[in-house]
Length: 451
Image 1: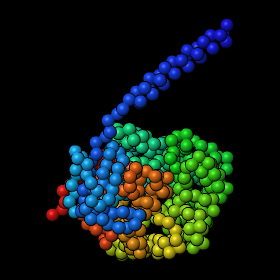
Image 2 (image 1 turned 60 degrees about the vertical axis):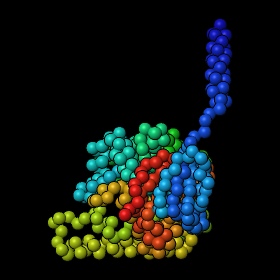
Image 3 (image 1 turned 45 degrees about the horizontal axis):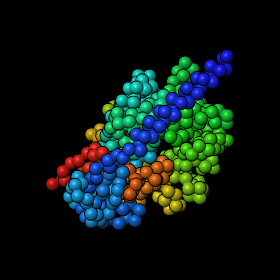
Image 4 (image 1 turned 120 degrees about the vertical axis):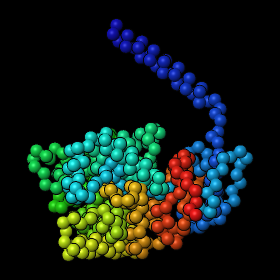
């Protein structure tokens, strides 16, 4: 009798499902009106693939996507026209390494102190709200897509990503990593046994290959679009075997792996494991750069000019003139060393994806404005302006697994575009003054031309 009742319930449920499906299919079978077409006119249009700038550019947008882009494109009758005058239009920028749910204050004394204050005084909900504000500032600066690489509490980056995707919050498209995988302690400094429970708020500590495999699966269950691993935080280092399992497990389901790695041992292990990108790599040997080129591993150089470090990390008020001079020399030496490393990587043929690693409040600048200062460092390292733009468009899109969706102004891709009055092909700092931003067909910012 029980089997009979269960069978009847199953049949009734199946019938209800079929009726619902039939209703849905019937609704979708009805013709729907096409989305209206908008035409963005500009004096100059940049094709980031070829590097050519076309006069009298037009980008036709329908719904969330680009319908057509080029010079002297015919504008359909009845289309809404957005005339940007002589501005240069190019794809929305991509920041392949940021932390929207952090906004550290230099006066608190560096990463360790700021991390403790953040974790102990801010819930994930509050951090997600902070991320919404930082994301809006990124978007208004022309950064239409970001890869948020951890330090977002318990999956706060996923919550923010989903809210943006649903239109509940205005912000950049987010590729989220959830909590980063790491050796014991994450990137915290020394903690008492009682305080070590805080590590789990920011990191998933692994010890052994099976824990590494389990951590990747948990991250994917939590909604990760990619996996972030902290290869080394001296003296703690994730093993090569653990890295290989992390990469294997992520790649098995089509997800990428970003590896925070600095120094000979850490960068070499990351490259040997086959990660998709190595982040920072402030010191990296030539043989690893050679391996990265051979394996098509991106370098994400999170570099800035010395002026950024001096503004973000000011010497304490009690510092003597000699100490201030030493502080300035240190900042300039660090920036110069980074320039040399990046120049070596470019010469070795390593592909570059732009990443700011911005998570500090820079006086007088929004999050987006501060993030774009990374381009100045790339230029100081000898990168050509077009290559810098490609690092923040085409290369970033490929690294994020979105090359079929963003990164260029081409039919079928997302209508992510920005406009500047200057010429970033001559002076990359022109990208720091964006007067028009469109993301997914939605106008985010539109200002008149500078006089």
